[in-house]
Amino acid sequence: MIILDTNILINILRKENRGKQWKDFLKDKSIAFTTISAFELFFGAELSEKREQNMKAVQGLVQQFPVLALSLKSAYLAGIIYSGLQKKGLMFELNDIYIAAITLEHDAELATDNINHYQRISQLKIINI
View (cartoon, one colour):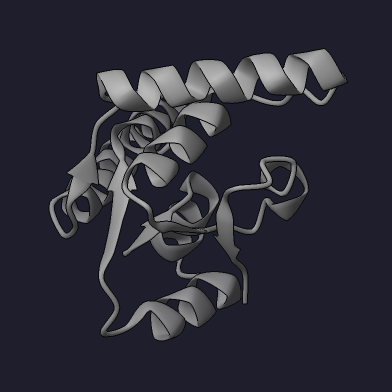
């Protein structure tokens, strides 16, 4: 299974070149995304100037794929990841740590254009095209 990072979902929603590339690559693959990404998408749509249009687009997208939640196990994994990164001075956004932990819990690969942050988590399998 491939879990989509929020930046991939945004590109797909915007229908830009990068979104089309990802959409073509992901065709016929088992994909999902997280409740964390759903939150980020809804938050962005709520703040946007085209709120109603963007909210409809997000609602349509979140109904197309399975959405994986932050469970107790992924919360535990996130705690391990967060503390390990903090000790090394390699911090990044907490939401990204949650997404990584959910991906690890499901033994999945993470599709992202944000390689710099995620490569700090050595056990995480990353896909970038």
